Figure 1: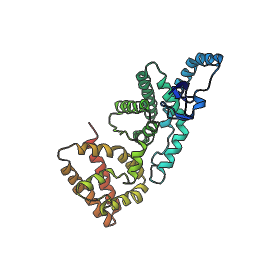
Figure 2: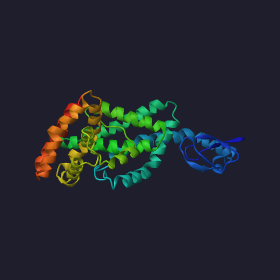
Figure 3: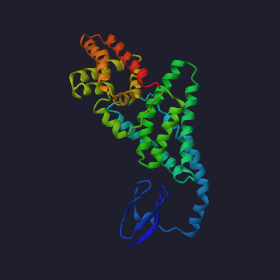
Figure 4: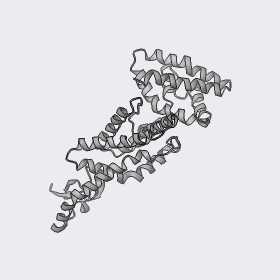
Length: 313
């Protein structure tokens, strides 16, 4: 089989194209392209112009990457609003479509860098630095903490999944580095790494991490009475409270870490039994007695106590 050298018109990656195919998938960016576009002949003068422009274009791409990547986080408002089963997928897809060119530019910036590790590190530091400046500029402690919680949620359920959705090793390394820098800057936070598919699958379980883990440990099914009751309470009462979104946002941020750390304990079953006895079972009884506000107090206490026990190092 004979091959011709070509160049992807989207990412400029060099490709070897078999001479008997009509379409090819770029091994670098995944684009499906007509073979004729990839191996299209260029004049010597045009090639020379392109070569001369590469440094200038790269510097421009580099500047845009440093400028626009942090905006992926900073421009998101009210992250909990679309974080619902019937809205998350369409919102995420629209967000990805809107930012696909920016993500592609970030990937190009990394791909053509002389030192890819250095560029990834610098991009991550700038990303976290800009977020930190926003948080630090807020004078009131409560508002500052709320902004950080919003950033944590946005990072966990939108920004990191968007970067991972590009499905490229370098972009995954960038996501890892951002989370590493985030933890270094905000050591009391525990933002997990997850992609869109896993988050969306979680909606089928209603993302009730701790209660699900407890009930599964105690032999109760995912659709058991207690879980269904607690989820209904969360969605139809707690979410409508003045501070409900704040607490649920914090819960989504810390719950996966809590479950992960409990699961590593040799006495995990006893811990989950304690959570059931001290928090969840009392909540069920209070909901059954229509004492929703009292249940709210117990629920809030559970979140705070578990956060203190398993999230602060």
